[in-house]
Image (tube, rainbow, N blue to C red; front, side, top):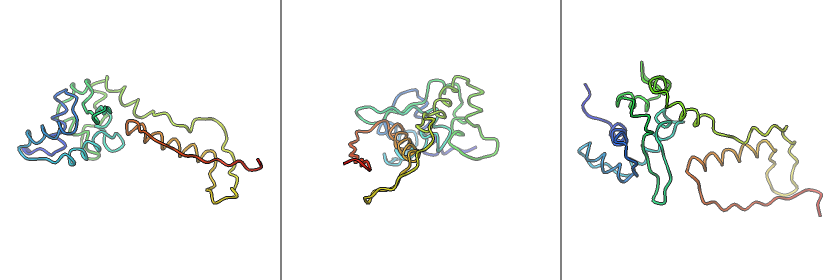
Amino acid sequence: MKTKKTNSELIIDTLRSGDSLRSPDITARVSELGGKEVKIQDVASILAKLSNSAKCDLGYIISKKKTERGYVYDLVKEAAGLEAEQIYDLTRKTGKDRFTINDAVKKVPGLKKYLKSAKTEPTLKAVGRPAAKAQPLASKGVEVSDSAMREILAGFLKEVIFQGGLNVNVNVTVQFKGLN
């Protein structure tokens, strides 16, 4: 049997404690559990992957909340019904007989609400109007159709939501053709 754990597994063990922790706290605990010094940037990089449901299934059940002092991570309380090995499997994309997020939902039905909310993020595509034809601009501007602009804005808003919100200053110049 494998005795040495990966940094990802040590991070999961730390999160299984039930505490809400910031990366420096997780780094200290991982270093202690692993018996070796671990760099905070390594932990932050692993946490970014583990908490992203697009990169691994574990992202559905890791809660990442922005605070004044940075992000706070913890496992959702329903994850306590899963064994450590099952949670480790959620970090893998492939593997024979691996435990998947669907298996986790079958074992702990309360996890379904996290899966559903992550998969049904609202987008701006559902406006229901046909795309307006792009009109060429007389200046050096870029030609962008109505639907393309919606997609750009939807992608931008998704990223803002994923990052936990941002302070953004945006300057937009709109020129209407035919108005003097």
